[in-house]
Length: 445
Image (cartoon, rainbow, N blue to C red; front, side, top):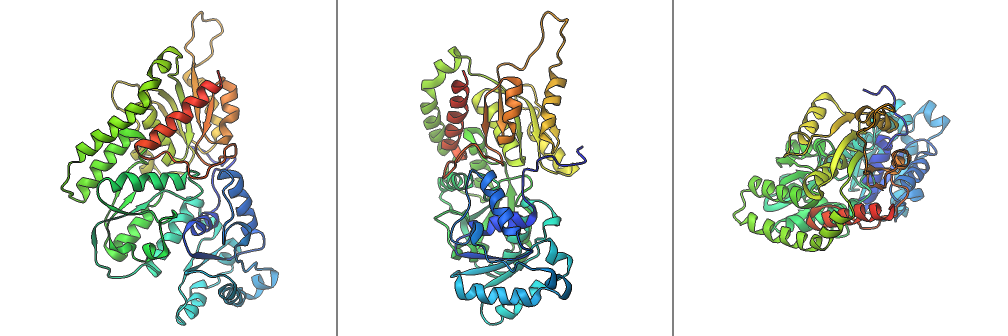
């Protein structure tokens, strides 16, 4: 158990809330925070989210009250009121969301009282207390979405039997969020579903407003998005299920079956799975000889957040034939979450279970590897982690160099790749990930 966080792999909760709002269509975030918060978040996002930053009301264009010493002493409600008024005059949006930083949380500004004044005049506005000290950016995602669910999403909407919402893919913290959400939509549309992913170019603010019509919320995470799903259930009666991020044929087939069962769909799911699997392996078939002859099977070390650590490890085991020997989770997780996640990576098939550790300090990965493969100079034969491959963030490049392994960055922060709409979800996403992994392996030869 870590007692400190080295090189954190996330923003504060304000940063997570801000990046979530930046990704929502027609939504204008308004920061009630100290000078510098928005700029710091923007540059951290730029450096960690594969250079994805900016947009109509993102990056350095975010409206902010920029409270100073006077506001700390006398309260910043008046300054927030002024900022909202100015934002309404300048920024054209369909929904305005006020979020808070540490300073305004500590001085106790009642932002809901301020936003209610505007709401009473017909302004579509929501308030969310997201002070950075509350937690990390994944928590900020849940806080702000939960408040939108409570304050903005339509009440008493009629349920649409084949409509679903997707939660748990956190914009920018999942560097491949655009492509991943696109892949998830395409996968679930094969079941004849109407899929609301909230954040892509095909989504709209109206979809968010009417999201209470969904028959089911699908949370593609063991941790992220669960609180938002609970808010939907409490406020609108929408049930939810959880599942791993579906990367590759095995996880994608499992999700199709799980969703079809949850919605009691009367269709031949196995026929869909068979057709998609046949296409997947048809693309992979030409690589089989090279895979064997060039010794492209690897021992894998995975250092990542909850979503990617689970999804990538299962893909490597179930679909690519690699052997993950160490999986390090970099999130702060409670004991119940750890137990639940560990069960998903142990006792599957004939492959040995990887060593699973929960440690926010990723530099400890080399120590765990040395414990698994101790160096004994006097031994004639030693067990080694070779050939190896490291899947993690850009911070794992040093680890890869230490053990002489190629490396691929998939988990935040990613600063050595530029990502637009690349994604790893679904059957086709599994092919993309296999392509990226094997490309990195042969490039390093």
